[in-house]
Length: 286
Image (tube, rainbow, N blue to C red; front, top):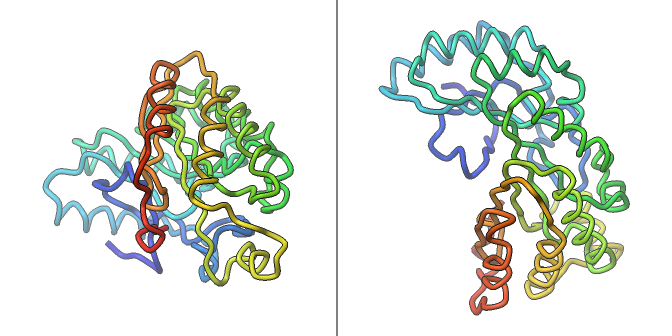
C-alpha cells in the first residue's frame, strides 16, 4: 500500500486494511486539529486506488474490513466511490464492511439514493466528527457546521441504513463553556441517537490555533478532574430510546468507559464515580 504523510484511523478500525482514498481534509480549518495541516487536499485517481487494492490482495490472505482514509473520503463523487466498492467486492469477497469518515456536510450533499447505493455495495459505517453539541463551542472552534446539520446528517444515515459513529471531544469548551458543552453534547446525542458515540479528550499541541489561544490566555483547559466532572454531566444528559454503544477508550482519554445506552447509563456513571486512577498526562496520545 502507498501512503502519504501520517495516517489516522478510528480505534475500532485497528485491524482494518487502510486505503488512502483521499489526501488531507476538504475543510481543514478546525482550530483544535492539525492532523492534515501539511497536506493539500486531493482525491486520488480510481486507477491508483485499484493498484493499491490489487497490491494489498497479493500480500494479505484475509481482509475482513477496509477503512477509506483520509479525513472525509465520503466527499468523493458517488460514482467513484461505487467503483471502489465494486472493485473491493470483486477483489476481497471476504470483506464484511467498508467504512470511512465524513463531515456532516458530506452526508448532506449525498442524495438518499446515493447513500442507499453505497450501503448496498458495502459501506457499512460512517464516522462523523461531532466535537460538541453546543452552538457557541462549534463556532469558536470553527467547526463549519451547525448543531442542526449534525443531527440531520445522522438521521439521513439511519434512513439509508448505514451505521453512524459520532465522536465528541471532552474539554473542548474550556473552563468557560464546560457546562454548556457537556449539557448540549448530551442532548445532541439524545436527538441524534447514533449507533455509536465516543469521547476523545482534548490535547493541544503547537501549531493548532487553539493552542495559541491557550498560550495567550483566551482559552483555559480543564484539569483531569474537571474533565471527569464534565463527562458525568454529559452522560447524565444522554437520554436515548434506541441502543447506542458508548465508548471513552481513545488513547487521549484519562479514563476508559464503556457501555450500551440507555441500559448501562447508571453503570457508566458508577464507573466515573468510583474512578481512582487516571491516565498520566504523558501517556495521553492523539
